[in-house]
Amino acid sequence: MPEIPLVPAHWRFPAHPTSVRRSRRAVAESLPQALRPHLGEDLGLLTSELVTNAIRHGVCWEDEELIELVLWPADGHYWLAVSDPGTGKPVLAHPDADAENGRGLLLVDSLATAWTVRPRPTRGTSVIAGLPFRQDG
Image (cartoon, rainbow, N blue to C red; front, side):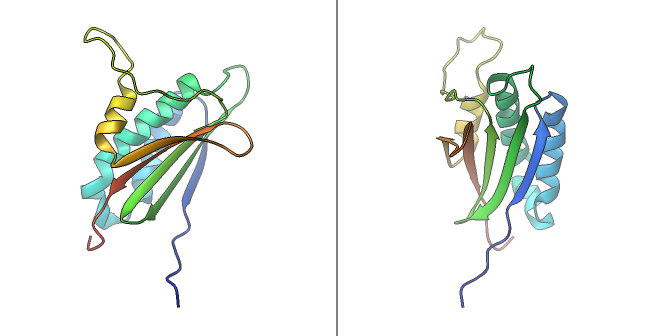
């Protein structure tokens, strides 16, 4: 009989800066207690960066847009997908040393084992990143 997978954790937050903190907390609290010391900090950073980017670049402030997060374990990783209604594709940049922003995806690239950008079937874009975890806790 096949092993039944866990149901992914799923949240929707308003496209507002206060949602960065709320989403980071929600993701951290959904991790199994045994994995929090190993994944909590890195997953929190990934969440903050991806949600911040989605709010800054993937929504129209006039509308009441939502940012969507999905977290699930698969293939020895915890995968985080952050989706927004925008059509732009995030690009890994290499800003000058004195630049005040533009390093978010560099951080994602250094933390995640793998990451990608995918268009959503109906509307928007998802950035998906994975962090490895040990099955033995």
